[in-house]
Length: 329
Ligand SMILES: NC(=O)C1=CN([C@@H]2O[C@H](COP(=O)(O)OP(=O)(O)OC[C@H]3O[C@@H](n4cnc5c(N)ncnc54)[C@H](OP(=O)(O)O)[C@@H]3O)[C@@H](O)[C@H]2O)C=CC1
Ligand SMILES: CCCCCCCCC/C=C/C=O
Image (tube, rainbow, N blue to C red; front, side, top):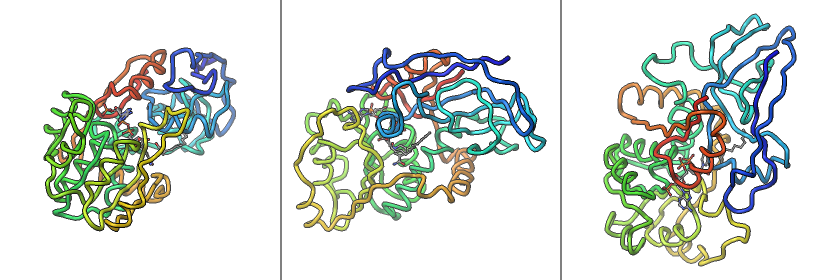
């Protein structure tokens, strides 16, 4: 008998998630039936969406939502070979039985020198989100100026680098001096620590006196109020996330965006990456190629041990991570 451990949500989060909001549970899995496979997790992802989507998709006692890279340890499905790897959306759980639906296999020729955890980060959903938001939603063009916040994170760090590959000028903001150093290392033209600048408005003006054509928005709230004022005429804003608002119990209120949207003739579009799910395989191929060629750098913030998964999640929301926050079992 195989024992599976899972992290469940004890109660809906109030404000920032806390360790006591999670419970580690264990259960025995049944024997495999014909057509089924048994998988064990190798890497799990902790992502900001888990905070707002826990409210939309979960009830107390449910296993936390999320995706992982898992290895096949037993197979009663002829097409599936033991030792192969899959990305599966099965939540915070160490072992699971599947008939193969709702998962996708990692390429059998995954490069030896690259960690498979990249399929949860730079070459996975966050990488595709960066690609879509920048190129499909903002429609960034060579020579334009791109602003991205949460710039040292899983999505933001890829946004900035794709923008450089496409010939844009890139400005990024992040929440520590180490993150700012990292952004310069990976090719951002300008970067600043939004927590220590005396004026966000001045920091944005200094970084790009010529204004901004594209704004890849991950933060929302007061940051956005200031950044929108720095947009150029006909600027485009891809609303990817609003992490500064996810823990709010009482919604934040204005300033309101209509005057600046009107007089600068801006276009703002919210997007969820899965609208482009059919394009994921092509985007992932491109992202993996850029990584293999050294054009796209990646960094991972690895928390070791499944038992530390809530701490890894809480730490990511607090800003502990440079690059993708990953749990290694
Ligand atoms: N629309 C879509 O399809 C998708 C949207 N997203 C969104 O993209 C954004 C980035 O996600 P992801 O790259 O995975 O996460 P990150 O790797 O960027 O990690 C989250 C980061 O958010 C920053 N942060 C936390 N609280 C605040 C705050 N109050 N104000 C400003 N920054 C804060 C921290 O960085 P710092 O130290 O810089 O503050 C932290 O490191 C999120 O908003 C997420 O919801 C992600 C995937 C898909
Ligand atoms: C494993 C279930 C995931 C369902 C929600 C995925 C949402 C991804 C888009 C993110 C939006 C904001 O962060």
